[in-house]
Structures are given as C-alpha cells and as structure tokens.
Image (tube, rainbow, N blue to C red; front, side):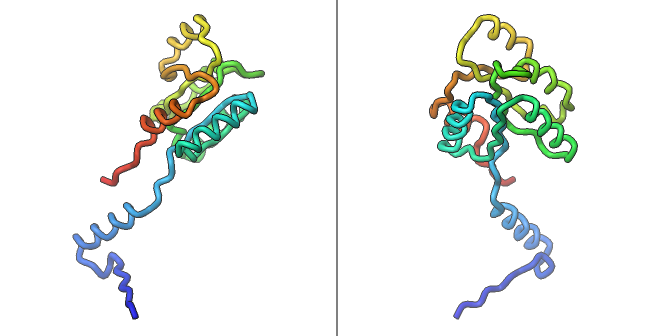
Length: 166
C-alpha cells in the first residue's frame, strides 16, 4: 500500500515552496508556438499542413484567404493574445494577395508583430517579386511550393526549439 503526500506551497518553507511551484510549472505541457498558413490552393494548403504536422509543428491555423487571416489577427490583438510565431503567406491569392495582406499587417501594433516571422510562398522566383520583398523587412524570405519536409524541419529547428524553463 502506497501513500502519496501532496505538499502544497502552504505546507512548505518559502524556499521549498518556490522549488515546488517551479517543478509544477516545468511539468506543464508547453504548446507549440502558433503558425498561420495562408494558401488559397486547397492541394498546397493540405500538403503544407500534412508536412508541418509530420515534422511536429502542430499548432496550425490554416487559411484559404488573406481576409479571414487578418480577422484572426485582429481578434488576437483584441483579446491580448500573442501573434503567431510564423506566418507562411502565399503571394498570389484572389481578392487580396500577399502584398496587400502585408500592407494591412503593418497596421497592427509593433508589439504584437515583433515576434512574428513571415515567409512568402511562391511557385516562381519572378524578379519583380524578389525586388518587392525587399520593401517588407518583416518578410524573411521565399519558400518554394510545395513545402518540402526538409524545409519544414528547418523551420521547426529555427522557430520551435523546445522551451527550457528558467
């Protein structure tokens, strides 16, 4: 017969209580940082989702158009939640393309945008797009479609390292 003793912080000395609380925090599950994928092509959207999930990036929010993505970001600001760590953005979409999205994105508070990295999805390397990207410092680079497992793993290693408790 085993007996379990549940020490609460009130039952412990101040130092022991702090150690116990830190242990409890360390054992909490850490959710993956959020990723938004904005891709209007259903097949590419699905492939991207599958590839990201395959490498372990699971906190995904998939969007088929730019407008609902902006609405989701507005809601994050309104509810004082963190922006996604990563946005994968298609350039060529109907109604609002990736460039128009970026113009709207710039209207969000800098504090909200500061921890977000944006990559543009493209199936071509048109010189005009490459030159235009330079006008958007929030865009890190282009990613070729479809997203490869190798690139997804690189994104995971770069942006989704395991969090280490302080």
